Length: 251
Image 1 (cartoon, helix red, strand yellow):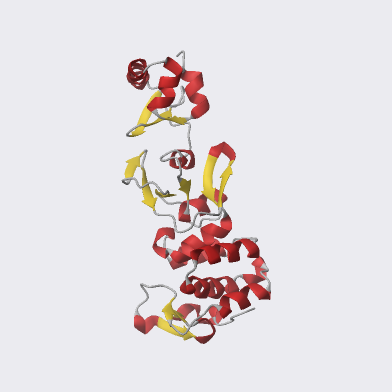
Image 2 (image 1 turned 45 degrees about the horizontal axis):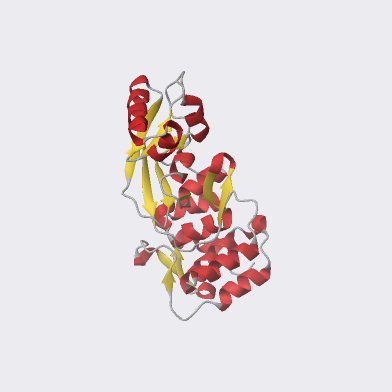
């Protein structure tokens, strides 16, 4: 157990980390083989290892710490970021990982780690335990932009319903980075529904409305045509059941 304490500090590690401890690649391979047999470490995927607890033999790293170490630029995002921040309605068995470096989806310890391409390169923060995760503002925009990656519209609405605050300057900065007209439409439309709690300034919604073009879009691309209602202020077709709240516009 000479190196167990050193690996425990890392929680997740690559073979190169072990090589740095042992002094050679051969010694690192031998150590990993031995420690795996003894139940000290487990292999998550190719060249990614996790330390196991000595008592319960379970990974000492959380799903979010594992996700962060999959690639050098990986971060927890979308529904998984809502989970990390404590605002997810349901716990998912799929971990959303945004990374500029692509990787093949894989399963470990009952969870599927799935790669997502980054849409913008801002709005990422490092939190306790070294977890790299999108902040709330980017998480909201990423989720609006990719509804299927957050469990659908209903799940997103449930998360938005419990958010206490969003920074309007960050939101607008990230919207500018996205540069997508439809995202201004959807964001203004959805966040206006929850603005009694979020207290975003009227200027934020005015800016979103100013970016609305002539194209009519669907809030949810999977919405059947006969179940949608047109909301003129946002040039959006929304689910009929949401008409009462979503037609409030800039409030």
